[in-house]
Structure formats: C-alpha cells, structure tokens
Image 1 (cartoon, one colour):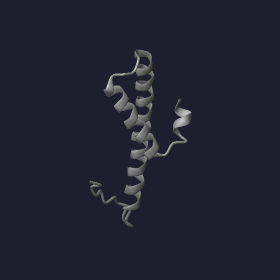
Image 2 (cartoon, rainbow, N blue to C red):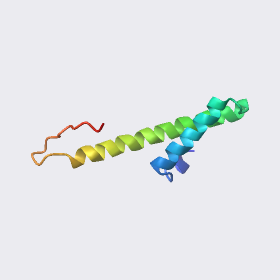
Image 3 (tube, rainbow, N blue to C red):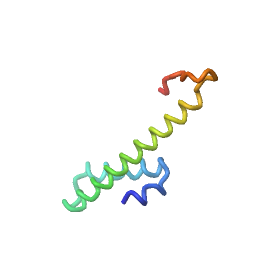
Image 4 (cartoon, rainbow, N blue to C red):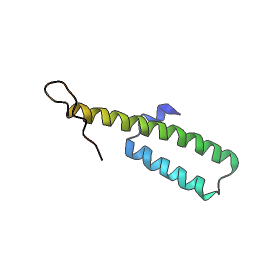
Length: 76
C-alpha cells in the first residue's frame, strides 16, 4: 500500500484523504469497506505528514544564515 503512495504528489494524497474522510463521515460504506478506507486514510495521513515535515526542513534550510545559525521564522 505504501509503495503506491510514493508516486502521489502531496496535493493528490491530501485530496484522496479528504475524499476518504467524506466517505467515512457519510456513514454509507459497508463495514469492511470502511475499515479498508480507514487504513488507506491512515497511510495517507502519515504520508502527508512526512511530506510536510520534509518541506518544513527544506524551508528552514533555505533561511539558514551564513553564520550557520538557524533563523527560526514562523511559517504561519
């Protein structure tokens, strides 16, 4: 299951996760389908979280000062 996640962009993974959440909230899935959807959603959430952490690390590296100290600016 995680192998096919690596081919997804962050945006595609997030969109799929949002769709799964809508399906689960709708309550119309059969139990087995809901469990599979939940498992896929958990994997997508972890993938998105990892990608966000990687992006944050890259941004932090970009704002690193020449004296090798990190200027920890808020990304909000």
